[in-house]
Length: 297
Image (cartoon, rainbow, N blue to C red; front, side, top):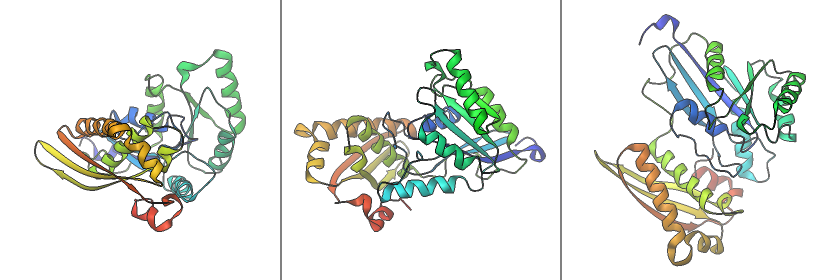
């Protein structure tokens, strides 16, 4: 490592309403697809740390679930993880979608985080979809009225404005030794990433409420030098959901399995064989014990 005396390190929370691009932004900064992304809101269910280390800094990004009002116990757990994401961080990124801003969510979340003394950067995502300069100026004026001093317009997927935002984050980090080993890209293990990838494929392949009624657990992740074998369960809440997820002649579950297998292979750079079982666990989202069993603390 170059100069220990000038090494910077800190935690950066990415906060905003569901589906504004929080996961895409973290993935863009990391240059790795750690956080799952789908067009459906509330895809992210737990805080995920993404670690970016270079010779003179380490940034620990926290991708949070979308801020929402709890409708059932799982959402309460998501809410708690947002509160946790405000603790002990150096920078808050408040991210909004240029097409929908300002929503009630934006107003509520900003009023909560503006009370915090942590440096806050307002980030407007999907700038490539802006209708005109006037719309941009209006958003800027609203955010300034709310109390934001630093406002950035970006596109996480098109790599617009990311460098300027990144430089500002770096500026706000304190001198501090790294929190994690330099070669770590997350605090999570491969079993966690395998189950998140499977969950992403379920979100992408199925519609309406079905994806929200599913949970994924990985029982075993066996890795050798050039291959890995993964045994996973997909839990649903009813027989009708199980039927939908399996699909006609098992076609749907086969598509999900192959898509997940491909992404796990890409992540670990090894051949992968994925085994999937569909199981029923009635009302799992409302049961504290089952949520703990599925990893939602």
